[in-house]
Amino acid sequence: MDGGSLLDHVDSGAAGQNDGSPASVSPEVATGNGGASGADGGTIQPSGGAGGSAVATGLPCDIYAAEGGPCVAAHSTVRALLAAYNGPLYQVRRSDGTTKDIGLLAPGGFADSAEQDTFCFTDFCTISIIYDQSGKGNDLTKAPPGGAKTTSGNEADATALPITISGHRLYGEHNPLGVGYRNNTAKGTATGDDPETIYMITSGDYFNTGCCFDYGNAETNSRDNGEGTMEAVYFGTCTIWGAGAGNGPWVMGNLENGLWPGSTEYEAANTPMTSKYVTAMVKGGKTGANQWAIKAGNAQSGSLTKMFDGQRPITSDGHPSRYNPMRKEGAIVLGISGDNSNGAPGNFFEGVMTSHYSSDAADNAVQANIVSVYGQ
Image 1 (cartoon, helix red, strand yellow):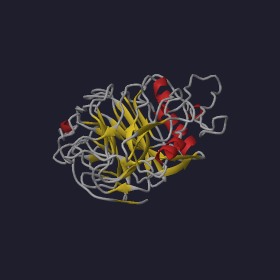
Image 2 (cartoon, one colour; image 1 turned 30 degrees about the vertical axis):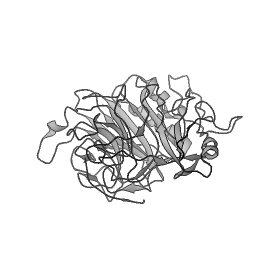
Image 3 (cartoon, helix red, strand yellow; image 1 turned 135 degrees about the vertical axis):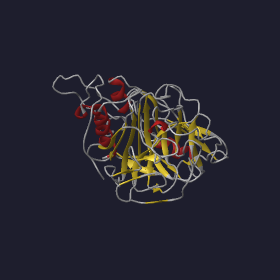
Image 4 (cartoon, helix red, strand yellow; image 1 turned 135 degrees about the horizontal axis):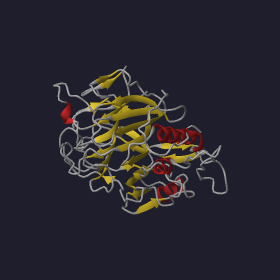
């Protein structure tokens, strides 16, 4: 998928749906306390349950795992996405070629950004690896050459996106033109017409008009292999293939050869997301169901809005079969499209992928946890 150019700036919340998945997850008991103080100053505490109901607590991947859909990929330069995770979040590379893993202040907590500051000091550092927290080993490194960009992606400047979340100074992944990450040999990700849930947290005030700032499922050969070979979250104002209401930016699905706001090229219910931090979610329905969904929300307050929930896209020449069934290949991309198109800047703070179509209850619980962290 190719096209596009640059950036520029610029809230929403509301409802639900349930696919009949097993566990019911209550958002009230799945929130973290935003890394509230303690001896370590960095643990993200799940709050306790109430009323004796069977509910999940913990961080996003704990919540999804509780209903049978554990993360198969979990990436962040900001925080752990599983309560038990105690490994490195990412690796930085100094200009002299030496590298250092950046860990956590405590298991299940925030990044120890002081490690990065000490190591990089006055030197220039890039993010060389974003580690997968799922246990699948689906780490992200700079993208190899592809069909659209025939040279490798660049590594992100490790200090270009300093942020403060829940009182902690941290670093996001700033993704200008030319930067891109990929794993073409990912394990456990959805393939073919199998279900999945993907979300990322991005900036609502730094986005693009081109193709394609994505996070999610893509081709394993870094080429455009046709409609239905991708399923990734896109954020921006590109209108080459489709658009939502107003002027954007929108959360859309990159399904290859199309950025889709819904089942057609215009979706009035898909409204602009302009909050400081945005929760952007794309979900692929159960095998053979011909169904997918887009959700979005303010990552600092409120609930998720269902921007679309319905059948797979029908192209302008009337061919629904091009996206039904899907032909997902299971690679993982960040900041680029499936064929290595890199005409779309954006910012990335965290994202997960599952091989399961999550319930509304689980999505709402995950959003509540996100708000408890980014809303502080």
